Amino acid sequence: MITSLESVKLILGITTDSKDALISALIPIVEADYLLIRNRAFDLDGEETVYPVGAEGVAIRMIAYHLNTQGQYGIASESLSRHSISYQQANGIGLSAMYPTAITAGIVKYADFI
Image 1 (cartoon, rainbow, N blue to C red):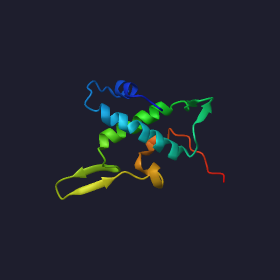
Image 2: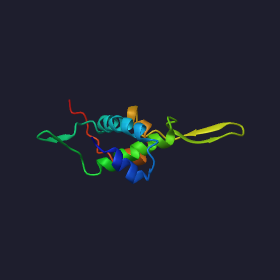
Image 3: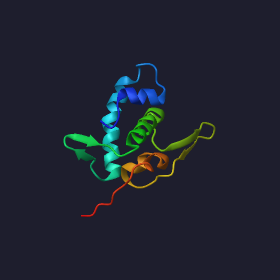
Image 4: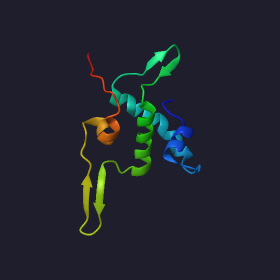
C-alpha cells in the first residue's frame, strides 16, 4: 500500500483509534485515486511496488482531505445568514477535480499515448 495506518496517524497527529477503520478504508481508495490521476501504473521491482518519491505524503494529504471534508467535496466556505456557498475552483475534469490543486500538484501526471 502507498501508506499505512500508523504513518497516517503519526503525520496527521491522530492519537486515538476512533478513526482507524475509516483511515484503513481510505488508504486503498486514495491509492486508486492517485493512480487514476497519475494515469500510469506504479513501477514494479520484481514483486514489490515502487512508489514515486513523495507519493506517500500526497496520499496522506488526500486522506486528510477526506477526513476534513467529511464528504463535502469542493465547498470552500458556507454562510448561514442569507445562505451562501462558495465552491473551490476545479483543477480539471473528472476525479482530479475532487481534490484541491494544492494536493494533486504533487502527482506527476502522464499523458495517454494510445
